[in-house]
Length: 143
Figure 1 (cartoon, rainbow, N blue to C red):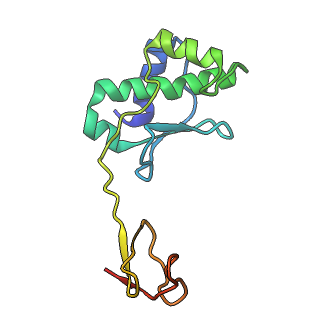
Figure 2 (figure 1 turned 90 degrees about the horizontal axis):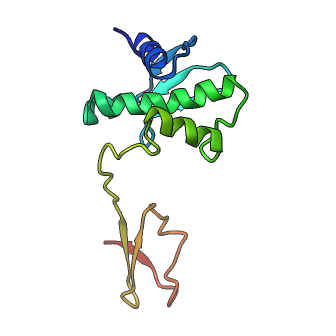
């Protein structure tokens, strides 16, 4: 069974309404379980959610996206903050928030002032030819 057929089945069983568009895998998604596109009605899903958490949790993610889908086409409040969305999501048992897939490791760049010894920690790399120490205006070197 492919993804579109699975979403059609969930829509029939849990909502009693048909899903008439396409469902696709999108491996570029990182923090969300899926996305609804009102412009053309298709749904994108994160394949890492299925791999990491299994089919039971993935079904709840599909329900979440189908809430957006069905409410949009019924011209009701389909956004996360809307009452219609929250009510339908609770009725069908969908997830409000997607769980974390992978632990993201934050890497930092460390710089050291040659003059005063001030240590700087930055997420982005900086140009040491252009920027100086904020305390004494000395030269920075990567540590």
